Length: 422
Image 1 (tube, one colour):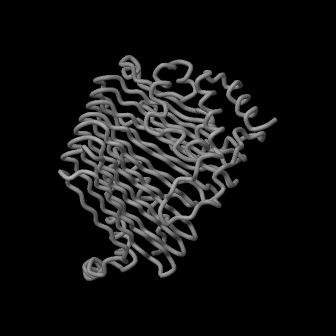
Image 2 (tube, rainbow, N blue to C red):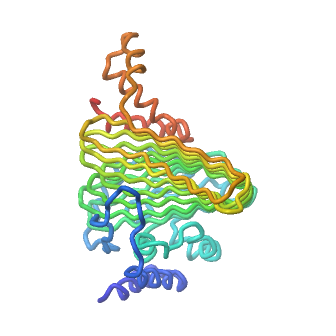
Image 3 (cartoon, one colour):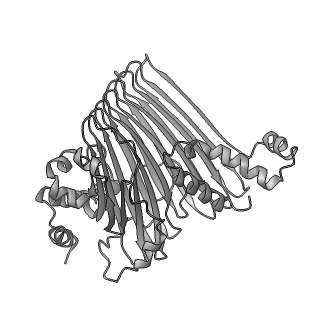
């Protein structure tokens, strides 16, 4: 059985709609024609990013459920383990308002018009080889829809667990649609159970229609055995807002694309990213804001820490398109080096095609501030503890932006664990 036949059989087994099968097959046909995306100063062409194991033939180890915290049964939440949804709950008052939180493939059956309308609304599957591979081999996902004028006060949490107890591709698609003048906070946790080497290909699309407000927070904790591509992108309408707070705390090699397309007049987006690289890990992160519309505002803030023989590259890209008068594009990328053997880059890129705009950037690669350490140690704090306090403060911008205190605490614990004895 060739690859096309395997994809068709997989689609038929899941009873996917015909339009989605055609997108799968079209994406597969384009794979050989498309190139890998360009992540400046990161060589990843030999990484094992194209594992085609859609489903494992082995029995999954359900002990992976044990990585889950004690669940709060009153909160909106979805949990997926590998390709399966194992927990899903939404308060009745949100259901009655038309909010949808479910598995993406279930949504294709139950809400076909919504999914077909908005899927690939932010990330076109024919952009490059990795987006096409994702479309062709996508094997899990979730769908969140917030209707017009609905305001959700409680953050919606998604726990997405890679099942590496078996050999299986982790190709997950997250589609979030915030309809006009709606508001929602979404908190996502990526993690791995098991030790088998597996590929990760994750695409997140956030569609914010006119006047919508979305807060998206993520804590990524994929394992050392996971080679990952993560693409998160927002398509932001008139007077809409999408704020991102992302903690890239993986142990394996990663290339990531965190983007906001400001397509409506007055659209805004703030992207905050923190990352820690350790061991021999390589992480390359492109963070981009493109101002297509007048009076749109896009700000990027990236802070990273590098230890041992690891590599961390931040590429900050601000692009103001011709006609986007009054647009504002700002970015700051800073990296702390905690080892002489580590390698870090903070690479600012500004592309300005319009005159009546505001734009700026700041970038630095350096070591822990000795003046701050002196201040703390002079007040009786041991140097090791003082260094951790300085580093935690350096990374704290994302911690404070996460809307769930339990996830804030977990993020701090993960950071402290990765930093160890700095």
